[in-house]
Length: 248
Image 1 (cartoon, one colour):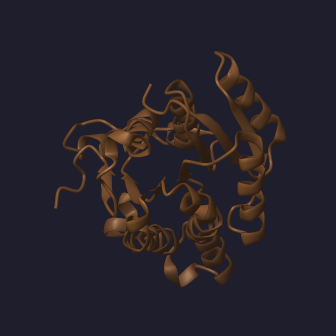
Image 2: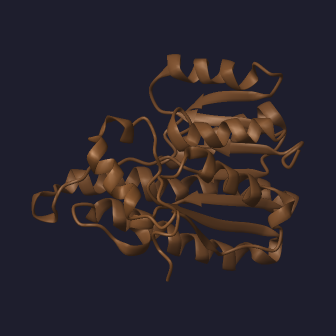
């Protein structure tokens, strides 16, 4: 198993991509600490699902965009599992509208949840990583952060900010054997996209070179690789998981 003995924190793991990452990590031997923001019932259900086959996983209620809560999360995970080896900054939201209609509250909320959370949790885990002289940070961005998108100025800014943050962290911490990479998913089919009109979704699929939407497991598979020792010489990179949407 590629992650045997490693301890991972995964934010925003209650559904979709985050849930797939948590599932894959447990299957690959990792002990998983996942965060949730409000739904205790969903968190306990996921906890039961992840541990049903003998894996180790625990849910922690935390708002990673708040520095104090991020620090407490790391302390709680270290107390529970002994250390942290991998952080997956996956928590994210959208609040889409045209710029002329976007409120300051919409801007701030998306930036806080998507971008500030990466800063807070990464900073909070550094002491643990530095002590071990080892660690892998995986930041989930988006193709929207790479190329922008009309009606998503706040989301695009937050996801583009993650890319600059990733490169800077990689440069700062590489000498301590701490790696930091970003993943930019494209059109990933989840329960959210299942609610959309089928003709619209098929149009998106047809525009993708591989002629299909991605699955949460497509993203999770890359997270497993980046969290494992197989990627020990990869840092500061943005890897697109988009079926060829962006080829430049």
